[in-house]
Length: 115
Image (cartoon, rainbow, N blue to C red; front, side, top):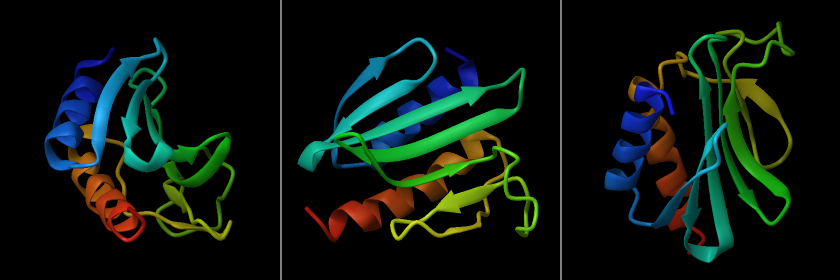
């Protein structure tokens, strides 16, 4: 696992009271959360690619990534998949150590209103 992702996961665990366990799935880290939620973190430093996705069962709830399929958005390629299916610009930078605090804050808000 990349050092940056390892630090980001450790920071997420420290800041997220809903986290229950972490699993290394080789290509990504999976954090099991309360309420049947899963938070998957993927970062490939060589390709400068990331994805942070909250899922429940097989359904993506919300997520951030930098796949280059939405060139019309501000801050392209960084974008956010909202729960309603809309895709909007994201303030993330592609640096997991910097981005994880914002992501954790948003996930804590989301989970706090549902758990």
